[in-house]
Image 1 (cartoon, one colour):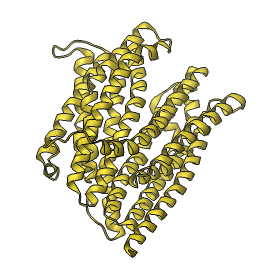
Image 2 (cartoon, rainbow, N blue to C red):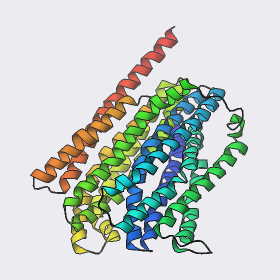
Image 3 (cartoon, helix red, strand yellow):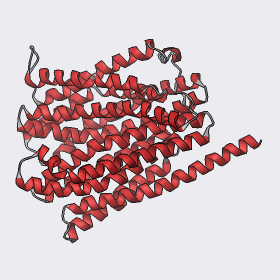
Length: 456
């Protein structure tokens, strides 16, 4: 990370930070994608089991790992303020927090998975595959969460290209290991869908060891000596991590779980409608990687500038990133609207599913603008360490506005299943507007505080 003076330099740094994050996010997305795809080649029950296991795993993982995202603004502000010793301690305490979170998730999934799956009326074979898949994934919890903390540290230094290179290794490794353990190649046991969980857990361990080596040996990370002089538990640092991280985690959980909830509520409609909904949701999730990556990048940039006391630069980065996200969303929405039929054709040849998918993709196009505003604005607020309002608005926009409005429209109007998407658009739009207002207020407060300090 370094100081910039012109808009051209700022935008060059934005691209340098965000493009690798985007590649990283897509690479992580592909792990789940290939788990499901390769399991489908083995058998229908394996496909169903892995899909269900993944749908349970992802909201839990994203929500709790989201707590660790607090490391990014904390470290970026400390590095911006040239307090590298304090940054090292923050990362070390973050690793301790990660271990505690792993223990919590492990116990919850180990004890509660039978109850969760038992309430889904699954066939016995699907139930067993989903359960065993999650148990196998749990073997990779520790390296995954420790890697997540180290990734936040690497990203906070602006070295997102390093994270990208590490993560790019995961996809080919995971594909090879899936092939070995799903289909029983090279003397390995033939585990079917369960093998996808085993493969992913092994992949997480390999990526963890690679990351440890890079941080311990490579410039500029080695000077922090992260793995030396381990401190005792420091409750004040834990408190800072949790105060910032818990609202972030709950916000991410509210965001990811709402789509699972809508999918479950869609079960009252026909199989064709459910399939069409999944097509639109899958493609929209891929497009969302761009505003999500911008959100993560803006947290790093704003945090660094705040730590250095450059409030005006922090504000400029916020506007540039939000503007970039809006521009992308406008382009992607136009492309999605114009090419909605070819997009749907990539997924299915079923005439009825195609008909519904094309209609769902219209709402997906509308969805883009709201997503493009709320995601980077959330990222900017995290850079300011302002997360409580974001958490509250996530709950309100998704669960108090989006889901009830969607249910009412789907149940009591002619919109039918499309009502759920209209509800989500309404909730997201409300969240985007209120969060944008909040960002302006926070920027004003920080600018006033900075001016007051200079005056004294």
